[in-house]
Amino acid sequence: MTFSSSSSVPALAAITCLVVVVLGCYWPVEARIPTTLDGPFEPVTVPFDQSLRGNAVDLPESDHRVRRRVKGFEPEQISVSLSANYDSVWISWVTGESQIGYNIKPLDPKSVASVVRYGKLRYPPTHEATGYSLVYNQLYPFEGLQNYTSGIIHHVRLTGLKPNTLYFYRCGDPSIPAMSEIYHFRTMPVSGPWSYPERIAVVGDLGLTYNTTTTISHLTSNDPNLVLLIGDVTYANLYLTNGTGSDCYSCSFPHSPIHETYQPRWDYWGRFMENLISKVPIMVIEGNHEIEEQAENKTFVAYSSRFAFPSEESGSSSTFYYSFNAGGIHFIMLGAYIDFTRSGKQYKWLEQDLANMDRSTTPWLVATWHPPWYSTYEAHYREAECMRLEMEELLYSYGVDIVFNGHVHAYERSNRVYNYNLDPCGPVYLTVGDGGNREKMAVKYADEPGNCPEPSTAPDEYIGGFCAKNFTSGPAAGKFCWDRQPDYSAFRESSFGHGILEVKNETWALWTWYRNQDSDNKVGDQIYIVRQPDKCHVRQVLKSWIVDI
Image (cartoon, one colour):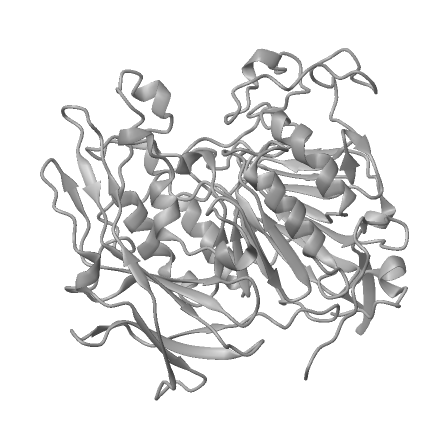
């Protein structure tokens, strides 16, 4: 349901209606959904269910969902990504076969054209767009390690699109001919305080396991208009170049001369996901498993090559950070594994992007990056403290409403928090690193006896320093960890799953988290996140809002 911005009904009765039978009559029973206005909440921990598949098993290359099904240079691994605004999207796909071995010969990206034919009618298409293509290599200068070269990756930007409109498209090279089947996507609504995508799916640390298939099945059943993937995509770096994999790379392969990867896992992932992301736009930000070091100290090559990003459209010079609008929401995607210091390019870009944002047309401000600042699990505890110290004040001053993170393989929702203190104007932090990947689920909490790590074990992966120190105030003063679930942690549970964000108007949004082990429609955690712009003043002065109808 949708509430008007002036309505006080949600604050008093954000409800779902159930039905009971009493003497043959049906009476409505109100089950109230909590709101952040009710907070801060007493911390809740749901005990870990030992019967769950805490470890996950990867789909093998023989699984029909990951095998190559096209011939020659026909398109496969087709996906849609958003540009900075509703009037443009990116279509991406792969043609030709990848190679892995000791004597590889890269394909010529100029040998196949990058063409998309599209329109509002299924047939015939009324528009045509062309783009660019590339091939990337993953090379290892060590004896016995196999090298990889990708198929030809194509990216085509469609422009001049209408808001909230269904478009049909085919991609490929019509001169061969090698065109795809007809697919479709729907553009985002126009930006405005009353205009939002109905459902946004949020998932992190996905991988390609049997648990992943459950996550994607449940996510797809929720019929999202947009998918956010908060880092750690394929986990190809849990494999050696010969295809041998492990749940823990460093445990199983301690003597490898470089952190190897098995790049065909990227192709498997693209094929498995095509059914969803050829229709529903996906926006991705990098995680630590995308680093994938190779010869000449190159990193993130597969990530930067395979996905299309609205970097240029949003004023960014990097695939590691960018922004875009989805109706009345402004999304900021930040990089935690590149320079985030105040003197760096990313920070300067973030300052400019925030200053240019118009809260009268995009009232909601949502930020994402991979490692969480506010996680109470032992795994990766306070690992991104250097990034928090550099960026938190800036994001807070511009009134970020929600932050999505991954990295920790579990679910956690915070109370509104700033600088470890409960703050009614701070963001709600949502950790959703529970997509189902091969590494084991996080089940230990840093506040439990014997689980608090040493500060020296919490380095930042970019700076390499030790920014996390003992708390200087509050209940944990003088300690590195709390001795109970921290006040800023509202709800935590170790289960695989995904979340759905439904923004209702300029001040109300419904967040729902679903567990994989439940039926599709059973709720694991749910809350209305409520903005209070009258109480929480942001740095920017609102601009006038004009829309041509």
